[in-house]
Length: 164
Image (cartoon, rainbow, N blue to C red; front, side, top):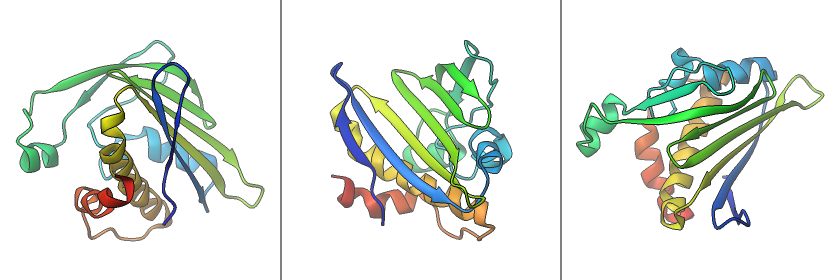
């Protein structure tokens, strides 16, 4: 199990970083991180990307979050696309956080994925780390064509101790 790493950013925030190698081209991974049909299985919000820098984003809670945590179904957080260079780089804000995806070919037809989530609150690093780890597992399984018969929310709970 390859855990994410944490480092301070120098401006009082924290960067939670994940690196993964997948057997799929950056173009296919790009679709998994930007298209709703793929995002709904692993991304922790309902969002549709407008990939123009400066575009406003709206992040709505998922039905699973409403069911599990009693989250208000109408809760929405906003963000903005900072950079988009398909299929290499996607960076956007989500509330006070910044999410950055870097995709590069590995030379064998696969892709090196670097995902970084920059947060201001150190206390959310452990749950965020476990959640993103679980989401990435689902994303990779989906790319590989493997069936996922478990919930990323349950998997994040299993991973929580590794990230605390």
